Length: 315
Length: 257
Image: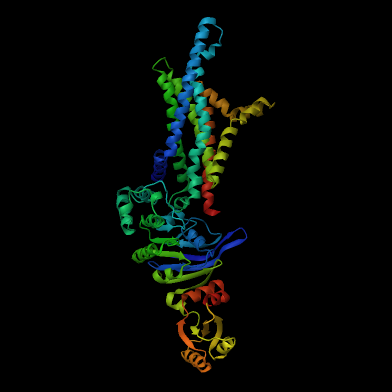
């Protein structure tokens, strides 16, 4: 459905994105993940036909975004970072206008607007001015706007940014419902979001793809490490060295309080046992021990900010 | 065509439902209501003087020159300041509020965007001109009015306003800041009147002809006196086309910049 080949966009000497290659199959929900300024929005804008790439090509449903932007735009619904809503219009009129722009035939416009309103739960506010709506509702009007022409491809740029937790949950639910009916690309820098809705993830950093895979494969990418959280009653200055000397422990960080420690260890369960034994035998007073497998967050931090940042986060 | 009319209708509704535009119309009406009766009574005094002394220049005794054309020049002054305010929301504000993204990601060409918006400004200007036209039209209740000359004169000024609209739309497309777009547009509107001044200075007959042709004054003064020349129409049409085309280029450029 979407085919991106060697896509590059430079702003003067700066390359916003550099040689991106990926494809999205019909009906797939793909998460575009990366820190701020990684090039997510630029990539999405190019796929929508909003702007042209410096080099490389992007195709939507077989149409090149540069050669045939009108055909591409007919098939794409786009929600930019700021929802493109006219504050001085009524919700109803606004969606009607968008339907006209997107080329929905006059006889079907009424239905198209109704359907978009139903899907986004906006029926109650259809006769309100958009400037009187809360941020969450405006965001939903933005999504309704992307949906109104029933496009094959939906591109949502940070759809949940700046919303309260309940609204975030609602938007996620909405995206879940849309799955299957549309091919969806969604960008975010919030991890739980992709975990909640996406089948496949493309992690992008400094304009380059650093990883693209399914959720499960990515989570194990780190090579199966284990994180051990410790709480000790009577730590002393030798504790750090003692913990480091235990076989299977890769490194040791001080936690939030002097009593807390975080250890990066090998996958095996014996490590936990050895740590517990060592602390007991030294009489340090073990209060708490817990272990967790490396999760997507670690992978993300490692791939985008480098190993040092990942360790700071862990500490 | 559907797309152009969609944009046109949306913008026209935007003007009509927007209190700002109605306030502008109201204020124009206030100004006209003040100056027009003054102009009329000055004219009637001149008539009296003429009857008693027979000394006033004859041309001034025509209501078309003494009252209606004055009214037109006030309307012109208004439009120089008001048209930039109408056009600045069409692109500058859209860019600032990011609603421009919607247009750029819709299956619509930049020609359709610009033409739709240009037509909507023409509509808004038409409404303001209509308000100004009401005053001379109602004078017909007291006196004989030469309708053809009056309507042609207003048509002439409407063409000038259409030139303003094209130039100001171009200014609006250039920048994200409404203020910058407004100031740029006013300066352009004012300076287009200065171009013709060079006629007084240049020596060469060819240069003189050129400056005469590009002087807005030459063309307008013909039309307001009731003479329509094709050369004037061509001049207005080409200036309008030039600036609408430039605006279209600017909009299109955002696709590949």
